[in-house]
Image 1 (cartoon, rainbow, N blue to C red):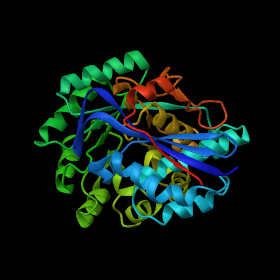
Image 2: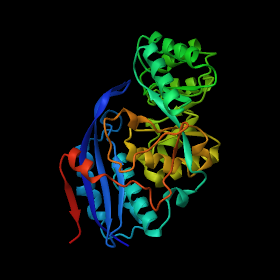
Image 3: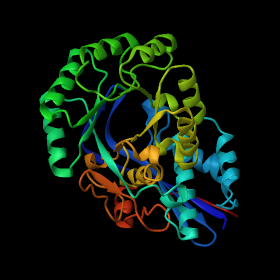
Image 4: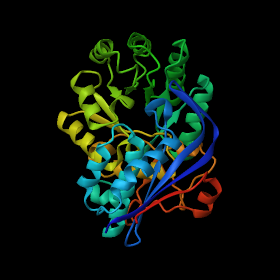
Length: 373
């Protein structure tokens, strides 16, 4: 079964409200739907969420790299020849989100061709994941109100607090208000998106000691190599590499250099193939992993839970799976549901990301199609 053509469909869905964090602010999900068509009629689907302020990719660049560089090399390849497909993608550096979407779409097609759910092909450890909800930049009381609402409505008991603001007192107060308001049984962890220096991060950790925070993600730029290593050595909680560990090579560098002692895996930028390599590296080194979210749609969140539920190590912690709740609409034909704080995989061949074509027609920006001769 060979790749016959590849679609890249840019679309835009507004968020219910702007999402703010240290590395940027987003108002609209300007994503790209990627479809890999085979010569036997199987279509693999994935979502590509560009994050220009983090990875340098845009909606236009993803369409261009897929159509101009990757598609001509991928068309004609057997979808089962994953190593060949990976080799094609690896020839071009960067462009992780474009590569990740193509990889997931190929896996989706493979699952459909074999009549098997992809989470089973990957590992099949469990059929659902606990959900962590992201809390963005807001006054402390508004953050608490949101957390209480999501706990009551969806049964969520893990929250990722976006930090990295100045003055530091803003984030320190938010940590204290959340802990006091949510109690000791709720997990709270931090993500600074490189917003602090290493010394500022140490000061926040000092002032929040005793609040039971579980993780600190990307406290400062990984380029601060010496000070970040010192931070990791003295931190009372694991320091997670996220945007500094987009590839297996990046993750190796951060772990072996002492720049992090935990890794965030995001299928949106690694696909399933490289995510498996990153996971294997972390498992071998005894390093904790989290399943992150790239402000994903339901299509992207379904891919995350598909991978996360496949392995014991990735399903151990709550995954960041709720950002789609901040969107005004979605493309998934059968919406995801958070029940008792969990999202389940789809027990159908492939990933199960069937698209509502009427919604796609409403939100699409244009339509680019690459076809074999």
